[in-house]
Image (cartoon, rainbow, N blue to C red; front, side):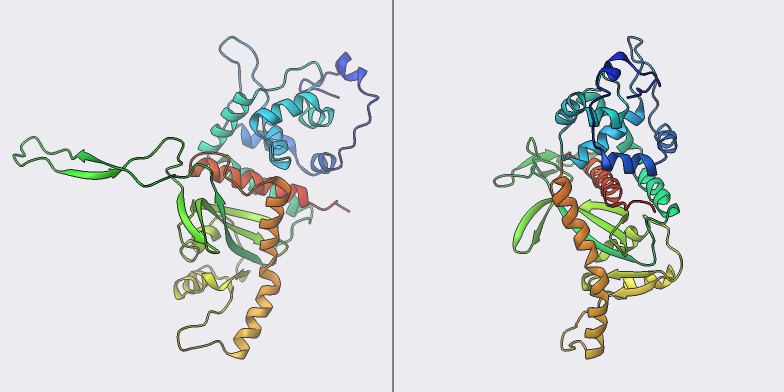
Amino acid sequence: MINQNNVTSFADLAVEHRIVKMPLFERVNLMVDWHEIEKEISKHYQKGKSVDGRKSYSSLILFKMLLLQNWYGLSDEAIEENVRDRISFSKFCCIAMDEKVPDSTVLCRFRTALSKHNAFESLLTLINFRLSENNLMVTKGVIVDASVTPTLRKPRGKKEYESVVEDRKEDATDVPKTKLVQIIKPNVDPEAAWIKKAGKLHYGYKQHVITNQEGFILGIHTTAANESDIKNLEKTLNTVSLKPRTPVHADKGYASEENNKILIAKKLKNRIMKKAKKNSPLLEIEKKINKKISQTRYKIERTFGSTHRWFKAGIARYVGKAKTHSQHLLQAICYNLYRMPVAV
């Protein structure tokens, strides 16, 4: 194993005879330009020396640990332990056997720093571009849909309010007014919201996702769970750059005159399923159109199901919309790399 300083240690030589199969890691290393990734991260995360003069951990090591964390559905503490314990994880991160593994607090600060600068969006774009260059991600059409990401930090019990006195001007002579403000209880994510889906209440966020026709994730827009899908089509489309006349597939939940105008303005083909109106059922031709669209649109449901099944992605791990958005983007990067076919 070669460490981050390009030096092979005696400890590495001692375990070199141990055969470690890493098909996923080998495919990723073959396809991803890590120098390009590190260069992009350096725009948002400045590495240097700590207060006591020790050299900081490479940003590339920390990013690879985030990938491993999401691929295997591990916590910050668990990924630290696994990188320290598993030879395959250490090799992927380029950490020599005699080197220290970054602890969970370093990893947390690194993720937070990238979240503040929306760095994960540019990293997803960079990796997708690399896959497209190698003809591993072809985009002839796109699919848009939304999925709820619940959080365990939900309000419990009845809402509680307190009276708050409003500020008044110095020259005001009237009696100060009071207003009722809801009390945010501890361990509750205040940026999340309630939504009722399939007869069940969920508290959390919603990821509005755009994929190519094969289900590879191109872009994500994150909102509170109570925001309407139909009102977020334009913001979701703005997360990617699409060529004119690209077909946009979506279910009937996105059908509206406003969205039709948005697609026309962006010069995109409208492949939104038709929706019946009051006293105006669908015509037979419209039913056939819907069936044709559904043959492509369903693939995004497979994307949601796979990320939940493979990476335990069905729950928000962090507090706040910004960090949950970063979680969505990291899971998208991991999903695209995991599904990446072997280059011929």
